[in-house]
Image 1 (cartoon, rainbow, N blue to C red):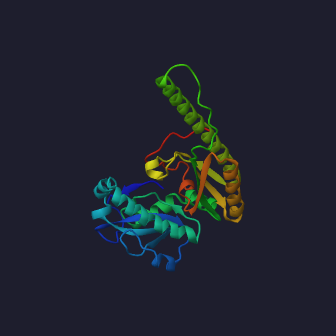
Image 2 (cartoon, helix red, strand yellow):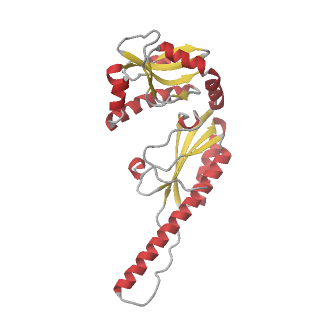
Image 3 (spheres, one colour):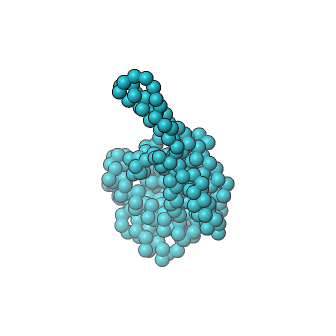
Length: 279
């Protein structure tokens, strides 16, 4: 569900100074869960039922979440992080209770009627996605280059003095680095192919820049896998086996996550990426 600021006047509005922030769509929502889950304004989230589905929303004061305010705030990284955490906390709570189609960050409607209209218009699509996600979770596997895990060639000998020897060493170092990156990229492709064969669906996102990953070495795999809950133990064992089979990359399993990567056909990419090796 795409990021929008749908704020043209229409329908009923709970508050004239507030819009409706959409967190996600489920088949049914437990009132106790909603009452215990704070939304964007700190108040509990609420349900907007329509067309046999339920949209989980929270009140979004226009002073902070209106169209102009959103345009400004989305450029503020501190604000963006707070908003993303609040939104994700709701989606994660819904995901723990059952299948959910997460809305993208900053999907804001004018009123409940607009939200209900979206449920009715997209009922077939949303129902199909919920059916596909039922009983399944998203798991992430990241792979990072392990320096020194690939064999190094001996320092080349040759004529000349110290300057020539330095240049030969530098060329050898660059060659070894390129070879190491190639071997790591090949390993990442092999790992992703194996994991995708076990998963219901798989996505290979562009590797994150180190400024996002926080890792000391380059990321060569940023995979997302939709895994049947009943086969999770087998998936974990496969990750462990692949880590032993490919020591040139360090694998990191994370999850379960709400199914952000599988709620749409073309999931959004990270803001900062590096080129993804081709499999």
